[in-house]
Length: 346
Image (tube, rainbow, N blue to C red; front, side, top):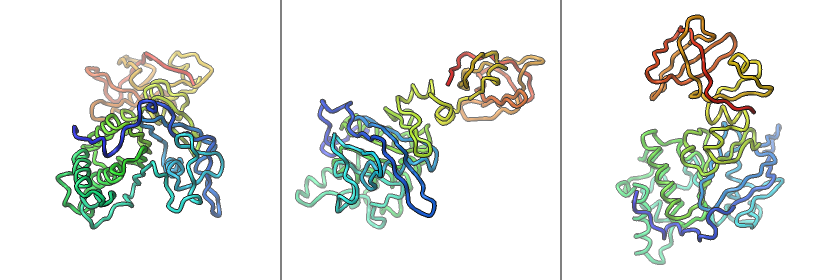
């Protein structure tokens, strides 16, 4: 993608890039009902200008609720969220809820006119004050998101991934400072997911746009986000750089969610010759396997995972997952010993 116009989303001034643009402090929100549900609990976070913050967690962890709180569709019952130092108004303070500097793209593409074509859905976001400029901006934003060839197609006839692109284009043409995306890759085919990710990265690079996105799948955002906010049952369990959190998860939940790492009790770690009084984390790729008669472990299963095989290793109640090294002819039923190259303690 090479043709993204700065006039569609104006760049952040240099002095703002990298500073905290959105900050939440001790935010809580509970849905009323016969049995009240606390979706967000005492949660603090920040998003930096010109960067991508990904909010990840299991389904029902409060991710989408937090996104609505940031946008101003919901108001925190305790705590506060600020944009550029100013408190974000809650719905009771605005005739039309939603912060004027932000645009939000929901999972259901609620803002799209199903029976209008792509061009009209995007261009209708601009006024007719300058029709020539409106046409130019619409054409360029459609081209930047690889939609120009679909300009005459009805939204009704598009795939989920194409609708996602149209919804993003319609949001971007209004020149927001912050783009909020709720599960942006949920309806995108795997073949086009990486393409859309590259488009988002390029838009951020060229315009200085700040992006906050929600995802239940860490693999969708690890290469995309500058910061990860990981929440569980509405509570923050980690906030930091994706690589750092992946390589040295701060707790067992993050280890399982991000890296699908092995988490062992001190007793289980002792079977591998590791002495610890705390839980131990071991990445799958840090386990070296050697076929050996009367080994401590046996190979319960070999599972094809595309670019590698996953090995399920067992010693009594202890189960480990490892990645089979190329050229190592391990098969189900083999007796093996293990060498641990690296581990960390929680």
